[in-house]
Length: 289
Ligand code: SF4
Image 1 (spheres, rainbow, N blue to C red):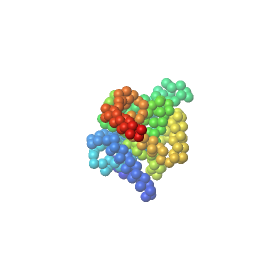
Image 2 (cartoon, rainbow, N blue to C red; image 1 turned 90 degrees about the vertical axis):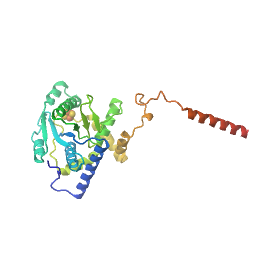
Image 3 (spheres, rainbow, N blue to C red; image 1 turned 90 degrees about the horizontal axis):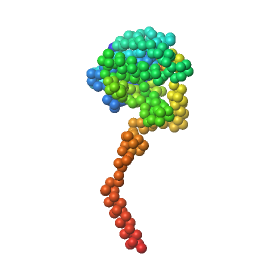
Image 4 (tube, rainbow, N blue to C red; image 1 turned 60 degrees about the horizontal axis):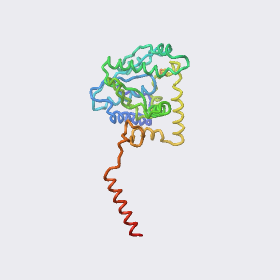
């Protein structure tokens, strides 16, 4: 396996950027204990900049990690029209990366079930998730790695807030509902702009993401715009929002199921304080009178 995938030509600033991304990926992996000794990590590759970046980050970290873990790249060919079938196998083979292409025609299922003009993404992602879980089980993968990054996490946070009235995002590590799979997002601490710059220099053979004909979720596009305007007005805001997602005070929100507001009582020590405070105040008042 070629663990050092580097472009033909690169500058010092590229090496610095690459080091930054590797550092942030390693930090996220350690912070959330994403990968452990002996893990077999199924790395899901769509052919977009994020998943290629994640794969090369994991390969670089595998080389220097003090633990042993396996990487297997997986691509789900959803049979979208004009999907270039050779690009990913060629990329994996030329770098000696173990891989598997899964052929499942979810495109036809989605097209037959969702009326023209309606958003197809939610059914498509559900089908894809089911196939990935099944594949992980078959190949004995202990972790499923997805290429979402910090900006995806913040966008999803607002999508859920604005359209689902929920404080919820994409977690860096998630146990599936049936408790049989663990999803990890090693790029959780990486910013999209860095990934974009890195992927440009790496010149990855990108597969377009609009082959299914569905426009990218329009609501997500609006939120992206909103965040980018905020960031222009107040640089660092997206990072602050991400920081807030990782620093929650349940007692200062309003979810009764997560914080026991009903049982809040003034402690007896506080009562004593109030009593002695009133006595002193009363005495002071009498003395002055
Ligand atoms: S954009 Fe297309 S491929 Fe992606 S989730 Fe939506 S329907 Fe599926």
